[in-house]
Length: 474
Image (cartoon, rainbow, N blue to C red):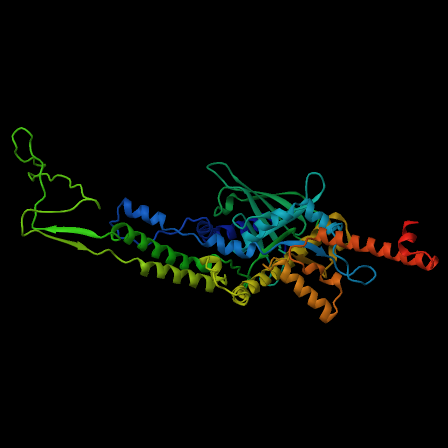
């Protein structure tokens, strides 16, 4: 795309991408929100069967998305080397972190990760708002498309578009589009009506490149993105089918059936004449039999035989559901106890082994998403006029979300300090659940304590006959 491409041509290409991927993304969205394909049932299935089919949907997809997403939480940003050539410190007073807080990304980052994990990709746009402040907000994969010269390796889009309003009847749809210099307003009648697409330049967005950033959970060398839901649809359908079969067996064949042979049921008779009451076909109408667990069946005729039909065992269906869920856990790299809830009698070593695959997957997501956040910080720095616009050595700091008790962490950190000689301050970040603000408070308190200790030492040297406590009080 080195040659000039008109804005209208760019808009046509981007809307064509949304049209091409729309069915696939909507199918993923349906499965994420529990709108699954119906299980197989006979063509002549009645309403009762269809009710059981609706109740058979057991939606595991939100858990597959939420489990890794809940372990992704950016807690700080460390810029590249300072002017003195030393590694910069992580601090909440930095311009980059100020942009993060101003955009309220502490809370909004989760939606960006969940979108990328579900659909394979999501987007953010970094721009000045009406007040002139630089903010970053997330964009949905269902409404947004981006063009890359090399989609497998480039992190900077050539152009991007997001739909702000879908067309309805005669009302044209609206979209925003960005290239490397300007923002455009796009209108269209439908995604596949190329002649109705119009693009109008709105303004210069102020950045030297397209301000849209892609967050992709997995990108192959063809530039295709893949989320965690699409590969699991077949397994989800298998689970739904098994649960549907279980419900059918439970509804129609899970109760022992009592039988009687050689006995005709009593029939309705006219109270005045005593004649049998006939239906439209001329057959006698039987009386309803009131039979339950408290009543006995008996007959005067010795040729009458009573019997029963055994119920259908449900254990095989339950074992099949359990096996399918275990397959889902293995293929999705989700610990089985997250899905099955079976954690009894598991040692700490067994739990750690079960969490290993998930930890590796989360580490892969952190690497991919971290690169995207670093580009966002560079865009924000450029728009704000700060010096970090060309900082390719910065890195985001992810909060340690592993489930460890404070006692275990304290014991491990104490051994690292005693046996390896690692400074105590270097281990503070590994305390479970610690935030960047708490770390800065600890740093300040440690500096205050050092200042008091240095003052006490200086006063003691100046007045050697006076106790240190008295010198400090003086």
